[in-house]
Image (spheres, rainbow, N blue to C red):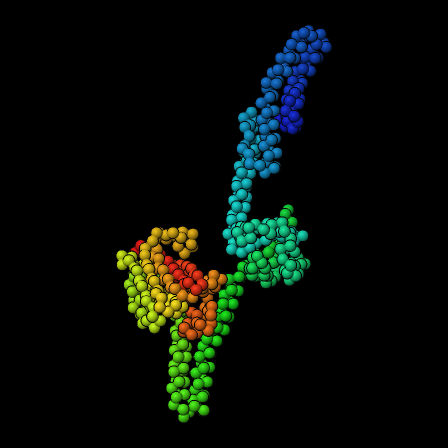
Length: 475
């Protein structure tokens, strides 16, 4: 029986009808030869032999056909497995009497399915792991052409770089030279890389040789760590130190010069003494204000990631600001008008920081407003109308405070830079109105800590509107 099955396996590899015919002939061969011998010996009539042979052939077809079909199904199953196709185990009911074969096929199917699921899971985990990395990953072949990337590339560069060569991505000779060295000596290297317009990004690049040969001919792994924000931070720190030094050095130099004059040529001049002391007082006040601003900024920055724990009633804060700034407004014949609904709920925040923020905004409105005009402050509770803003994405309601002045205004191109430290549109005018250039920087960091938002609208020579949004959270 087993020899017969082996013969049937060999025949089943042919076309189905050919396999069935040959298998039937194989099974019926011995009975047909017996009939032929009987006819040749005269022991059986020819008509009887033909009728009997036909019946034998039909019975053989009925007997063989299920086996041939099972073997054909098994053959297709093995071919599909060899092509890594996902298939169900074949129905081998007529081969079940061949115990070893049935057991082997069952174990093969179980083992293959387990291995396939394991490989699919490992591949999916690897893909998810690579895609979740914050760095850009490029896999290059021996021609330095990008063959694979991760999702970070798709998000940052809209899927570009795929199938591009290293030469087409950058003209930086240092990158190409480093890649060639890594290919040659199999030693990974780091290199700085700047991707110019329209991306304007800075990267620290790690290039490694792919450790094994692959069917995809991957030769190099390029990992690009984005250091753009770090570069910007370094520049801001450098600019901050330079600006702070300059801002402090200027009044110090003025005071030192006046002291030297009083010690020499103006020693016996009472009029000069009085005049110089007034200037020295102004410069000392300016320097004190600058140092206090720097200390406030440092304190707020230090606590920026610490959630506020106090409670703030914004209308009360605004009324206090109105009272504090009224004398300053009177010097320019200006008035401060406040419209604030006292039913606005308290918000989570630090009252000192919120007060300092609004003091800076209202102070600027007075400084840069025209004499004889008014500063209008309004505060109201609103439903979130800015759900696309990251800071307000999960907020249902916010307190909207609007500070409006009628003054010199701000050109559109300067608005994005207003919260930079020491940024002044008109240096001379800022010094004249006793500005340090730190007020809106402090405002920016206060709002970041309180998950708020600042929007600025302005028309030159007409005035500006500073709008603050502070989220209302359930207490």
